[in-house]
Image (cartoon, rainbow, N blue to C red):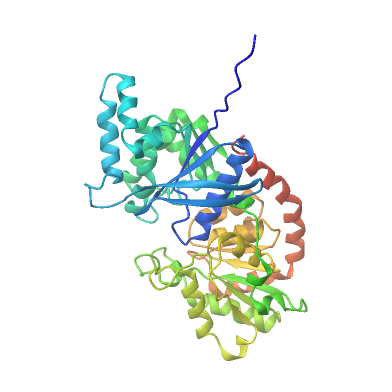
Amino acid sequence: MQLPPMVSNPKKILLLGAGFTTRNMGVWALTSGAIASALNAYPDARIFVLDYHAEPASYEVEHPRGTAAVDMINVRFSKKFWLPNNILRLLLTALLIKLVPFKGIQDRLFRRNCWLSHIQTADFAGAVSGGDSFSDIYGLARLLYVALPQILCLVVGRPLILLPQTIGPFDSAFGRAAAGYVLKRASRVYSRDRVSIDEAKRLCGKNAARIEFSYDLGFILEPRIRMERVPAWLAERENRSPLVGVNVSGLLYIGGYTQKNMFGLKGDYRHLIHAIIDRFIVEHNAHVMLVPHVMGSAANRESDFLACRAIFEASKDEVRNRLHLIEEEYDHHEIKALIGRCDFFIGSRMHACIAALSQSIPAVGLAYSKKFIGVFSSIGMEGLVFDLREADEDATVRQVGEIFVRRLEFRADLEKKMPAVRDEVMSLFA
């Protein structure tokens, strides 16, 4: 008897709170990391991104196994409720469909809506939440922005996995209620730090066993840049003096979204950055490279690119010949490759720091939230975090210099740890 041919049934994976529509290289790194890990476990998987955007899009995403075609299913976060892909309208439609008593009819109704059909036919949804947006630290609107697609997937009936991220803090009753709804119903919850595990367990109650630790997905992003894309000064540079990368956060530079010291920093952020630059160039005879990690022009008010330029232009004449500004816009692979040329790194964007640490480059985190200490602690580098909500400026500048002197010691430690960290992240979906 002739056996029927084997039919492949590839996994369909939906990613939430991820994508390439923002100019935030940290979100890009998380998205690429999730895709790489998923395809490592399911090489023939079809991966889709559910993202907020006016139009659908398709991407060619490079990963260790090759290149993957990833389609973006666009929904809208808008007051225009009449839009067919408005997230609130989709949620209401899904709730009404679930009231129908017959599963077969429900399935047919879901398939008639192209957006809900994509969700209903997925094997599972993996939520990245932008890494740290499953919290009300940035306001309730941002929490709703990331939580509504997760709630929609749960209502449709798809398994939801919260991929490694910072969970919380939740300072409002509404924030705790929204987070609790998702956490109690998620199939599995991964936190990239131990503090978030405790936060999630308090909200999960009896479902706390579903919560596990995993390293940040950004650790497996591959650095990649063509030689002609490397700035001429960097390509021609002789390694006689150390190169220190300094990531300037446009968000902290403008004082947060409120522009009124939203995160409660103890000192003046701009003055601190200038003090760090002056110390490294004058006392340590270093070259300093200003590294943006959120790109964009004036339309993006939190752009690191604009903040780096402002810092460069306001710097003292005597340090200008050793201060370098990245002029081009790069993607996440390229920025990581440029960071990989540094001997030491100082960052206010956490994924800029992860780009350094994952290449065994000692990195100091200038923190404005708990996510820094959690992620740095996960690899035993908690001593390299300075919480700007508490840190004294003079002490910070002095202690960062002391860490720089010990950079080879930290590099050796990172070189031992990073292979195991990358292997664990790559096997997450397995």
